[in-house]
Amino acid sequence: MAAKKNKDEELTLEENMELLRETAEKLEDDDITLEESFKLYSEGMELLKKCEAQIDTVEKKVLALNEEMGTEEFE
Figure 1 (cartoon, rainbow, N blue to C red):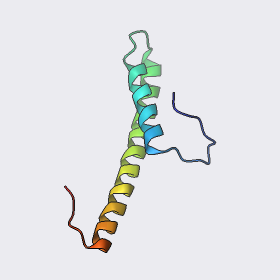
Figure 2: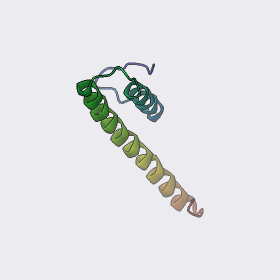
Figure 3: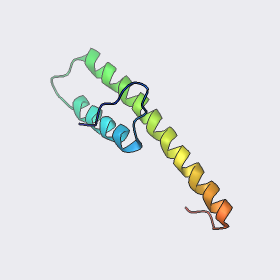
Figure 4: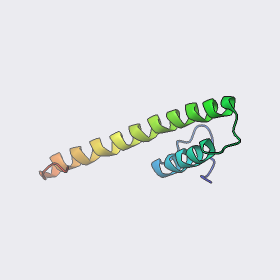
């Protein structure tokens, strides 16, 4: 399970991805209630948004660094 941090501490991309994986595994449980499924789905969507934002931030940093160094854009 991903490490728990204080509310003020932001989780790393890897930690958020692990929580997202764990959430997806819980959603696959046959014994889960509809209410719990919805709660987990909502949590998963929030985690997905965080992961996408973190990936976007890293991508922008890489593009800025490439531009600064005069290297070509990656694909």
